[in-house]
Image (cartoon, rainbow, N blue to C red):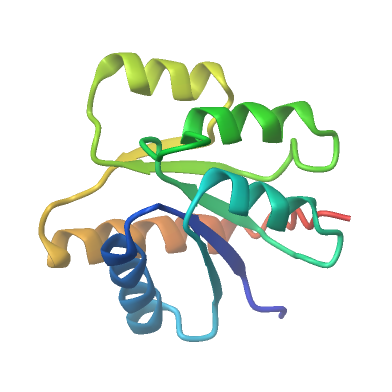
Length: 138
């Protein structure tokens, strides 16, 4: 079976590192790519050679926000079917509602402790790998 390809979009180098550590611990066979901005992620996603199964997206980023990236992805016929999971520190009902209005697949509020964050990522991985819906861009 092909390894799963994940894209983490987060402007925080510390949060990117936490995600990398979690994935290395829980799914060493997974391919994890990190993008530090919405624009960087959009450029990657629009590259026909870039393959991704699921995007983990932070909302609050300078330049192109997570909402703006999600909106752009859902407008693009090549990107519309890629599942996008919001991973944000925001638990504001307005943010959650807007994410689902823009067709996010799910919304996770980042845990403040690494052990709980690891548990969140483990559940996330279990769900997406058990569903194994291949949504390669191409």
